[in-house]
Image (cartoon, rainbow, N blue to C red; front, side, top):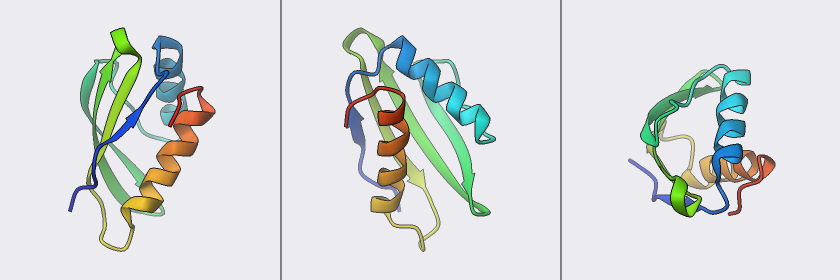
Length: 91
């Protein structure tokens, strides 16, 4: 079951690049395109995200479209919030 879409502000090119670097450090990749999908693993479980980065308005829309049932959307959002805020984006 997918989670609702989360909207982050202040995601300019610098913040988006930071997010892409953080992903590589954690063993996955976010494409350089303004929209797409990526998969990441947490504790041996895969999560799939769909994103849309609106560069002109510095907005990032992020949706977890696939996750294990034992991981709640709130936990996934908390992780995303911390990561995006750590790069300078706003929740």
